Length: 72
Image (cartoon, rainbow, N blue to C red):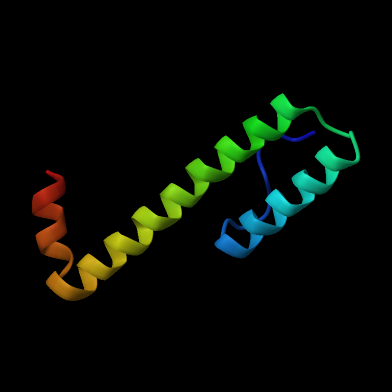
């Protein structure tokens, strides 16, 4: 299994991955602990996507220069 995914991260892909993990869990292909770890990683990926969306909204509303000043 590769640690780095070659798929683009988006909410659709994350949701599909979680559904696949639930199917694997129901089929006893993975353990509950493995499913929990995958769910935690998916949550972190979703948080990053939410941050990027919020940042893009802020940049659109206030401009890129404003956010640079805040990040400094």
